[in-house]
Length: 304
Image (tube, rainbow, N blue to C red):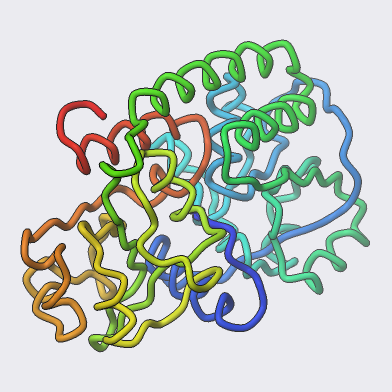
């Protein structure tokens, strides 16, 4: 999520990485949010604020895009949703922004906040449905179920979940590799100032690497941390995985692979850097089967 797109709001080192990833994925934005209880909504028009890229993708995949009144910064797919008012980054919301668009229902991914903003919006009695985050096939299907219930289209959600589940099972089966054949992958969210911040265990990046038939090269810590040159050398990644982006946080292959921390890695020797759209890669929404296939294909050739 990758949204982020990703869920990386754990304590300590996760916090800095969360801010880094948010900025890398969506730019430096501020935002606004809410909280309350969940319940089904009758189908209407222009009454819903969607917070979280994967949540917005699910709303659209359910044929309910016309219900959207506004969205957060991470919600950029399908492209048509970018015409909607943007209330800011899902984890840095401002209650003023949320209240300004006057939604009757907010559907938000788990981790929306900050908590103090949610308290203010809770007092305004806006209906709020939290969509649980999980980096797995079953977690994606649960997201679809919760969003479908919130929008009052459970039958459509069942159909969508059936298709997404089947597509993902097929993609994961094709991506399976024997243990000895699996490539070691290092996911880097930042190389600012020549310092590498990478994914350990328990992240969206960790999960998508495994689903695509790879091995996370770093499992000695949870979340995202800045790594020393020695730790990077010991990780010995066969491939580097990054979000495909431009702007201040972009770093080209030549600059990345020439960093002292990277020069001695197998990935630098083969110049194997894979770049994939951040929300597709880390969102864990309806398009995750596509992400698995794309990443597996980049790692092993062919279609995964």
